[in-house]
Image (cartoon, rainbow, N blue to C red; front, side, top):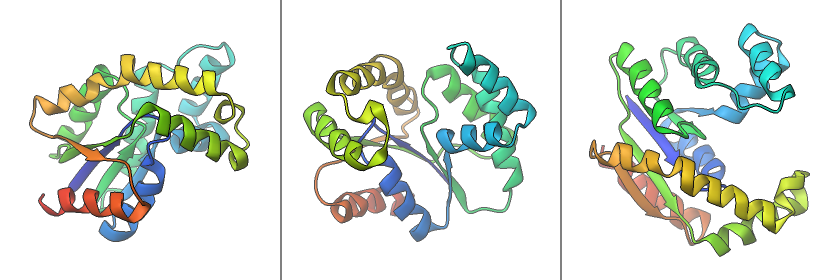
Length: 190
């Protein structure tokens, strides 16, 4: 079983590459954004819990997010593996993910971080903002804040998996195909 964390700052191309990797390797793409939309849209107990925090402007606690993740993993026991996108974002979330996979006699195979310079991220997200309909994709100051939050809060996850010998940096510049080929080179070594 291949279990990947597709990692990198907002706008680094995780979603685009995840789609291509799913197609090539038959993995299940688990995006926390999709999980939240599904659980809240279907008014599940976890979705209602998440909604209550979001409505108060608070962060959704890890145990709620991990619960949603657990539901998705348990609903798909026969897949060839998973691509985690947007999760984990913190060391405690990394530990919770490891614990969940360990319960299934499994583990993270590799964390693949798409390395993209800040200015390129800003350019990409502003371009995406032309069609995404997301207000936060059209404001450079907001984009730079998102990059800063990633660096401060999320990037330590790379070090967490690096200590386990599982983190790999991938050049995130070039065409979609060039980046995809670099990712596949790493995955094919597993």
